[in-house]
Image (cartoon, rainbow, N blue to C red; front, side, top):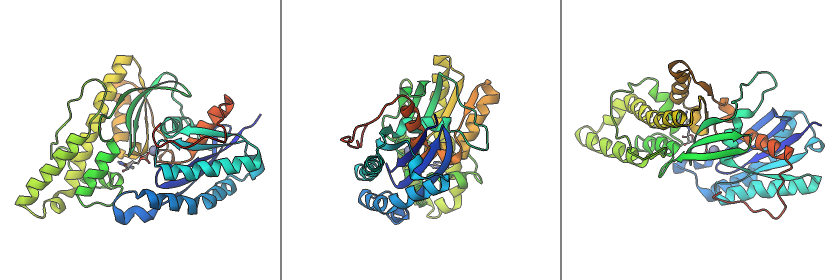
Length: 337
Ligand code: KG4
Ligand code: ZN
């Protein structure tokens, strides 16, 4: 039997819908919200309103792009959390209404679990190498940084996590200090290509075990710039590329160090990357290097499945549909899960 899932993602500032049929992506639509740009960060109230405006056109687009009709959809998967409550409510309510009208089940999805499951999405025109179980996944996004041990399609254990800021937050906050637009991560990545990663040294955290910390780096970066700007007001402009390259280099080193310790400790040589920061070209290169330097197998999702998207929600929904893990109509979204 063929299974077609509509996925809905609305946890932060992107309204997204996707169709997955038997694990293969048919469409992946997204509406980004430009409204937050001038505020230097996501404004929750504005995000909820934009989701409300975008959700129906985005779902409509995803269904048309997939070349299917609404009648062919077997289940609706939606992000239940974690995320902004007002934003989550829009996607959750839409999923409930759509499913009720069509008399099909709804499937709740944890956004973080979905980032990991993005590694299993098949493409119609390209073979995708999936990680075998068990494998380790470094999940790095704007809100989370976790090391996870994955033992089955829906079986995952957090073995390390950040005790303060997420890696994406470190990119974004430091970028903001340099006057770059929000979100700063992609800008830092781009400018870093032209810079010297060894030029500046920033404090690396000393955290026990497999946990991470990024707040010290942010402070060290801020104080360093404050001191240099006292000597030369143009310091940032003159050194922007080197600052970005050195910052990115430090964040990548911090991320890779714990991953390597974890993989050695667990005796696992299959490692994966997921979450928005996995779009970072330096981090992708550091992962690719592991193939040669350590003879490990490496798995990185396609760019379109790295940052927030609904394909990963639909894929998680597909796995849960196969297990008949459906939610009831009285389910409520959860900002923290
Ligand atoms: O997973 P995601 O789209 O949303 C959350 O669930 O948080 O991740 C967004 C984060 C932002 O912090 C953004 O700056 C970062 O991913 N990001 C990047 C890059 N592309 C997105 N960070 C560094 N380099 C990139 N190329
Ligand atoms: Zn995310």
